[in-house]
Image: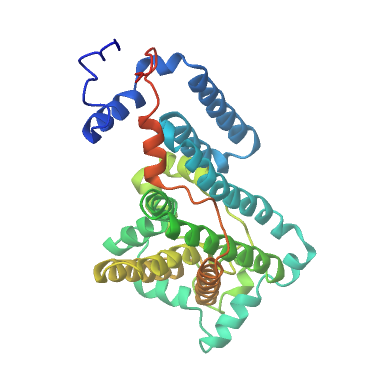
Length: 346
C-alpha cells in the first residue's frame, strides 16, 4: 500500500497560490544564507566592490547596483539577469573606459572649439548658453527653475536604468530593442568623441566667449553646494567624471531621448511625459552650460538611428539576447525544494 502524503502537502502541490507562497518563503529562507550558492554570490559581490574601488570610483555606482542584484535577486531569475544586465553593464563600462582616451589625442587639442564656432555662426554670433544665463541666472539668488533643471540633469543617473529594469522585468522584447539601441547610440557617440572632440560650454577656453560677454557658468555647482556640498561632490565622484572634450554628441540627451522612443509604444500620457522630460533635459543642458545646441541635436540623431536600426534588426528575425521569459524562471523556482527539506515524492 502506497504511503500517504503528509497533510500539509496533500492536495495542494499543483495549487498556484500554494506555489506562490512556497516561492516567497523559499526566496528568503535564512537557511539559504549558509548555502554554497549564496556564499558564491557574496564573494562575487565583494569582488565587484573591490574592483570598482581599485580601478575607477566612477564604476562604484555600477558595482553597488550589481551587488544588490547579486545578493537579493530571486534565484529563479539569476540566469535572466546575467543574460540581460551583464551586456547592459558591459556596454556602459566599455563606453566609459574608451571615452577617457578621447581627450588625449592630438586631434582633441586642435579642434576642440569647432562646435562652439559653428554654434556661434548658426545663431548669428551668439551662444544660446550665454544668452540664457544672462537672462535667467542670478548669482546668489537661485530660482525654482535652477533647482528643477539641476534635478532633471541628475535624474539621468537613475531614470534610464530604472526604465531598463522595468522593461527587462515586464517587456523582454522591448528591453532587447532598448539595449541594442543603446549600444548603437553609444558606439556612434564614442566615434564622434574621437572624430570631433568638443569642450562643453563651461569648460571652453576664454577665446570661445564673445568679446565682453559673461563667462559661461556651471550652474549646478552652486546649487549642489547649497544643497550640501560634501554630498554633491561625493555623489559626483561616484557617478560622474568630467571629460574636457566629451560634449559632441550629448549622451545625457541621447539616452534621455531614447526613453521618448520607448514611450511611443505606450499610452498618450506616457508619450507626453517622455516628451516633456526630453525637452526639459535639453533645455537644462543648454542653460546650465553643459552642452551646446548642436550637441543636443547630434544626441537626438544618434538615438534615432540607434532605435530605428535596433527595431529593424530585431524585426527581421535576428536573435539578440536569449528569449528568457519571466514565467519560465518563476516556474522553475517553484519546483525547487526548500533549503533543509526533502522534495515531495509521488
